[in-house]
Image 1: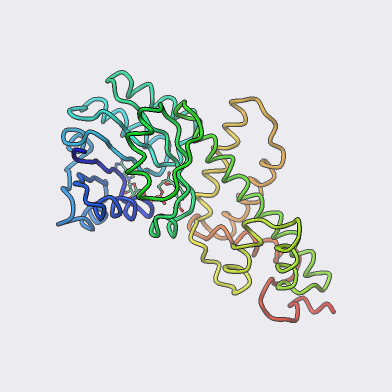
Image 2: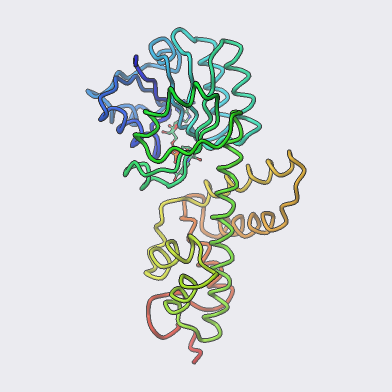
Length: 301
Ligand code: NAD
């Protein structure tokens, strides 16, 4: 394989690009933040701009914050597409923007592999991400060995945009599970139940979810609220999911309620506060604390 481009070296992009370097690939990288680029000095060629990456790489990975940024960078790649034949979008972009990106790139005979990821910064660092992929069979075969360096590759469909839809299905489920588990456990604590016992029962029973199995016992009960996914990014995923539902004309009543709860939490705690602060909001409203002490903090008995 020739040189690999990587644009967007943030919380997710940096560890993912690092795995490709460690696998022995020659990388040309770019981020608009010079600090993010500096982390790769000596390990990869640092381009001056998007065009610099497009001049050198045949495959370009993107890990960018917002659909508008992904589209702007995509236009820039198309306008300067010296070597580029394939773009792999690892960002959460939503299917509308992903289809628009595919069109922009197709005008220069560049194919798009739609590859959003799940598993957070911890998963990116440990190379244990779930990578949802949509693209032609030939493209998937081509990029599979590279993506396999970052985690578990799961082909979901043939059309770019469809992996984005899958990613949004996943993330609304994760956001909703945290919301409902937090408010239900706050109610249980008000009724005098021990939060640790509630978690044990939920995980042995039919109420189990990523909230009861992971987020609440590891990041709420010990009071760290440091799962590592900010409310602003959660709300971005929820917004994109509701836009998706509008696009396909499907109802999303629970999703709307989840959006309201997360919006209030962002107003209370700020953009960069952790998504597990959702539990703190439910605690406040219920007048309880979900902690590891064996006596519920609400004074109920
Ligand atoms: P981030 O904000 O940490 O990183 C984004 C990087 O893009 C930054 O370094 C920024 O400087 C750079 N950037 C912004 N505009 C640019 C431009 N025009 N040209 C070049 N570089 C530019 O975000 P992140 O957490 O790494 O997330 C990246 C993508 O992955 C997002 O789409 C996000 O929704 C998705 N995602 C994040 C997580 C997570 O846990 N953080 C999990 C799954 C998916």
